[in-house]
Image 1 (cartoon, rainbow, N blue to C red):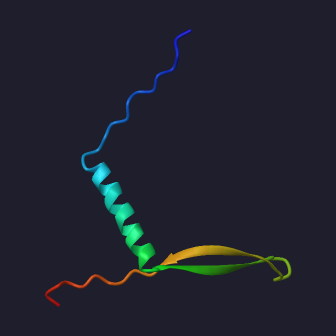
Image 2 (cartoon, rainbow, N blue to C red; image 1 turned 30 degrees about the horizontal axis):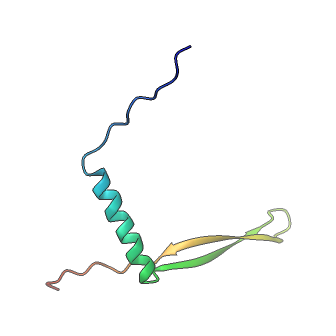
Length: 69
């Protein structure tokens, strides 16, 4: 019985660079404490009773400003 061997994944140009840039941006946002917790209440539809909360992560991104501005 032949063993399964998946085909090699096609690589996109600059995919490693893009992922490194994204990781770098996330690290930068962590250092700047840009992530905030937000809590979303969950209510029962039948009787409007609070049955739980959902924790969400929000990112506060500072607007980009050109050095010329």
